[in-house]
Length: 432
Image 1 (cartoon, rainbow, N blue to C red):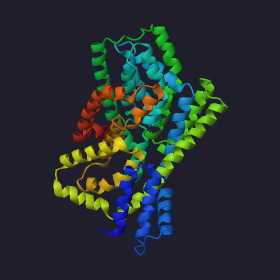
Image 2 (cartoon, rainbow, N blue to C red):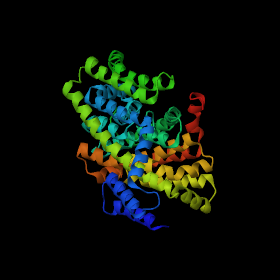
Image 3 (cartoon, rainbow, N blue to C red):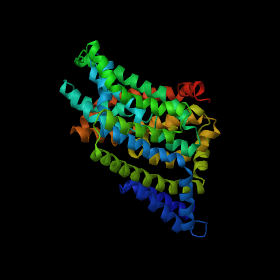
Image 4 (cartoon, helix red, strand yellow):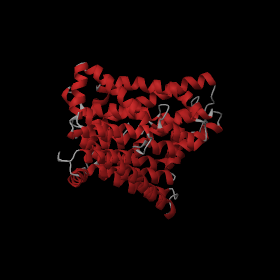
């Protein structure tokens, strides 16, 4: 191990020990490495040019701000409210109905935005408030909201899958298809647990609507729901690329929110644009800094070293998948998903490809791991989001979410060791 690499690893560890912001921390670590390795082709200006050239070539990343903008428009307009009402029509009459509504609304919303944070912060406040008003414990309401938000980036579209496709070369359309069944399985697992808790705690049934009211709510919600067809239908029909679909769906969301629901005025639209710029700026900084980090990782052949080490431990594909699952689950608890995707996935891709593990299957498994990590104590981001919007102490939310995490981990094990759960739809629909 050379001196520059020691500096690199020391800086990486210092990021977490000193609790530095992850993006500037990675950038500083990369600069220290370059300064410690002069004469090895590590000229900073040439290095910066190469990183920027690589970023410019990844046109698919343009889809990210478009999906972020669409989520902001939906949260600013009346679209999230329509989704919640429609989910209530579908499953709200059951015992513990609002818990089921929470999950179903997240599945529908995930088909529009691809963001767990957008789900938790957009639908979350509405869902938690409704559940509390109907006698559900606040901690349980927050836990269901955080757990169901993990479905967002698993069910298509998915911002983490866009980053993964950019790095691995896997088809983004097939990745989206591969996430559908796992996303639905997470929803089903959560609803089974909610049904059990509802009977045990005697939670109320939802309001029973007459047929006329159900039809009226469905008709009102249809323009909002049609955005899923615009987005996914455009991609899978081949009419538009995922990036173009993001732009088309964003335009459609503006039209629906502004002209059909009349809930998006100039001020709301400007706020959505402003928030999109903030979010995109944060993501861009992370991705840019992570690219410098990844360049050094590749230059020092760290992926090959890691692959050789793991293969020296075991050559069992199942055991290696289990080890990778544990690593990414732990990373998801502490680090932003975009950072994990851009920095750590390139380290394991050579190993995955060498073992013949399907890239679509692996991509869905990794995204599912990271999303479960977002709801896992002690530092899962979704826990802090639902605690912040509700005012509930995080300790109580952690207690309530543990059984839900077990349910999601069972789904993760199934998806990891039964690849056909992921690959059946890409093979049937995606020409895979």
